[in-house]
Structures are given as structure tokens and as C-alpha cells.
Image (cartoon, rainbow over all chains, first blue to last red):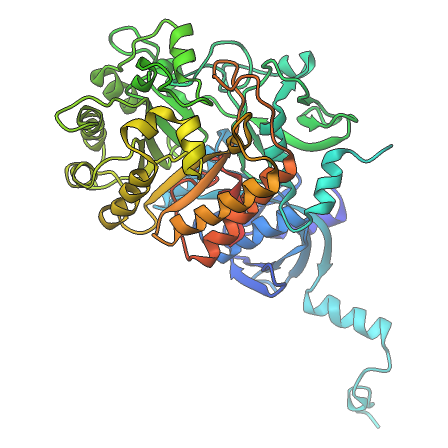
Length: 154
Length: 405
């Protein structure tokens, strides 16, 4: 399993907060929580379940698929880990055995399912605060408040 | 490697989804699966058999195909096409569509086999012969013949219903009990259907013209409604242009939610030539008036009319050129939409079972301009309709475009 893939498994943590950000046809981003988002290890793609046919997200995803655009998935876990995934919608299914599998899953919690979206990850950026701070200190050592460097023993 | 005609169209129409462009071209030119592609067709999971009022297929070819954006491409595979696109197995082992330069265009998927296809009715009829299906729609054709063909020069010249009925041994009328049994099994397949569509041939008979056709649909809809707990259910009836009284009966006595009466071609002279029976018994202007009246009963967004785009260019009496045909068609579509009736187009499939079997297809450019034109008009006139979307029908490039509206 590659380093990138290990990070994508954060999507499968039960208590993770997951946000899907899609651009509308004018380019304005639209952000929604998508708790159904998860990483399919076998297909190597992110999957999310769209419950509402006419949602802005669904329309934006179609727009992104048609135009091969980038969308973003932001994931944050309870223990402070966070990643930002750039991806492209690769496929949407509305019938067939895979759709039926997810349909029955949604049905068990009383929801209708419009579509199942698949997203191909393009890049992953670690957004975990500790990692980002260290990256910043390494890349920009001058961008720090002086009082943070003061020797308290003097 | 050179640029294919399709690549040129993708560039020229960069603001139109290449999936919609691909779909139109697949329908316009037809598709043929290579022997290798055919070897991947598995009737245990793929939909192959089809019986409807205008089609019969029992060969091991896909009933139809889908694209990876969920679009259905209603196309008959491996028929006698002059210049088809090719479906072959790609480097990933999946099916893809290729152009004339063998450049891969897009992945394609075969429609999944409906659950009820494995069953027979208590009378022994295979259930696939009672109902047809698309990925998300059930179709019932109670009358598998059109009585306009009883009259000399009565049928629509692009239509293959009479030719299909003549070439297949099948009952013209479906049995209500068998419809009921098939529906019971079909609805067990969770997540498969979002709509039931009823259509068939025209039956002019009755105390008032078309009364028997209306009664037949009421009988079928009554059977269907017993399966649902709600008063109304997602449904579409594609019938003749009924009188206000007949539409009111359908609305009041059944759970029907939408109504379609296809004008086929948006010009009275073309209508008279191409659809002589419809012209003789109902007439172009009366057809339109009945559509407008239907909006009062069924509600806005629940009435539409379909056109066979391209048929207005048929020779010798069709329009002289594509520009003229587009201008006239879209102007008339706008007029109809102003009355709250949606206009949807389908790509003309030149059937060898039709009077127009030797006609020539218009260009891809023509279909794109019609599809985009209708989509723009729909937006401008505020027509929001869920009837014939990519999911509920899948045969209309113009409604595919509204997925991003």
C-alpha cells in the first residue's frame, strides 16, 4: 500500500468529518458534508452516495465529469489528522449490481439513492496541523514571531 | 494520427458535453460490437432480449449501452449500419467506443439485465415479452400495433411499429393479468426503477375517437396503482392527442403523473406528409391545442411532446437545408413551450422497417444545434420537467444537457 493510499484510508474512519467541494459552472465552489464518502481499496477510488438528484453537488459533479475538472475532498478525524484530496469524478452509476449494493445500504437507513459517484484521486495534501506547522517552519524559517524564539532562561 | 470527425466536433462544440456529442453520434451512425466485444456479453447479467411495440431482439447483443456519466444511449447494436462506430475491448479489458480512426472515444457499459427477465407468467409467457426496461424505467406497451397502418398511407413514415408487428409472431394486445404478474416481480428489484412508461400504437376506435385507447390505458394504470401505497406514482403515458375530457379521465381515474403526445415534426406541411394518419384524424393545430389543454389538467412540467429530430429533412418534401430546418423547428418549439408544454427531441433512427428506410441522416452538427437550441429555449421559458430526463428515458440529448442546469 502506498503512502498516499494510507492517507486515503482516513476516509473510512467512522468519526471522520468529510467535506466535498465542487465548482459550479461559473467556478464558484460549493461545499457540503458527505458522511458517505469512503475509499474503495479495490477500485482505488473515492466513493460517495448522492441521495438527492437535483442537489447542487450532483449537478456540479456532472459538470466536473463532463469537463474533467478538479473537485476537492476535505477530511478531518477526531484525533486531529486532516487531508485535502484533489480528484476528478471518473464515473457515476445509476443502475447495476454496484448501484444496487449501495441502494440497499441507503434503504436500510430509510434513504432513497440517486447515484453513486466515483472520484479518482489526483493528489493528496496533508493538512494535519502539526505537519503543516513543521512544513512552514522548514520552508519559511523567517515567518515566525520573535517572542516564540525568546530564551526564557535569559 | 489525424483528427477524427468526432474530435473536430468536440473542439467546435466545446461548451456541449462530449458525452452528449458521443451519444448523438452513436445513435446517428449506429454501433457495431466486434466479435471480441460480443464475447463479453453475458445474458445472465446483461440485458439482451427486448420486446416492445417497435423492436424485437432475441440475439446475444446488448439491448443498449450506457456511458460513464450515467447517460443511456438508446441504440440498436449490430444492425445493418453503413458507417457505424465500433465497440471493442480496450486495454483495460473494458468495452469502449472507437471512431473511424480507431481512436478510443469513451468507455461504454451494457444495460444490466432486469430481475424479472428470469421469470415467466402463470400462462408461461416469458416476462421480458410483457414489459421492456431501461436502466431506470419500466415500459409497458399494451397495444403492440398501430391502427393508423390499417389505412392506406396512414402510418407515420419514420415509424417501424407496423413493420415490427408484421415480422414477429406476438399478440397485439397484452393480457392485463400478465402485466400485473410481471409488475409484481419487477418491483422486487430494489433501486431499479424510477418511472413506469406506457405507450403503444394508436387506436382510434370508441364512442368518441380514441376512447378505447384511453380506456385501455386506464385499465392498465388501475392494475399498476394497486402496487403502490400512494395515490400517484412516477408515470408517463405517451399516447395520441386526447381531448380535454379524455385527459381529465386519465388524471382523475388513475395515478398518472405525466402525459406526452408526440407531434413528431414541428411544421404543419411536414406533419401532413410524414404523419398523414395523425393529420387526417386529429390535425396539427388541434394536436397542439390538445397539448395546451392538457397542461391545465396535468400541471406545468407534466406535459411534453416529442419530435423525431431530422425527419423534417427527408426527401423529397423536407426542408432544403439544415439551417432552414433548425430555424423553423426551434421557432415552433418556442411557441409550444410558451404554452407550458416541453419539447424533447430524439435522434431519428432510420429503420429498415419504415417507409423512410432509404433516407439519409442529417449531420451531427444538426442534432447538436437542435439539442442545444431546445435546452436553451427550455431555460429561457422556465420549463422545468422531470418527465424525459437522462434517467427516466435517456433518449433525448437536449434533456441530458439540463443535468447541469
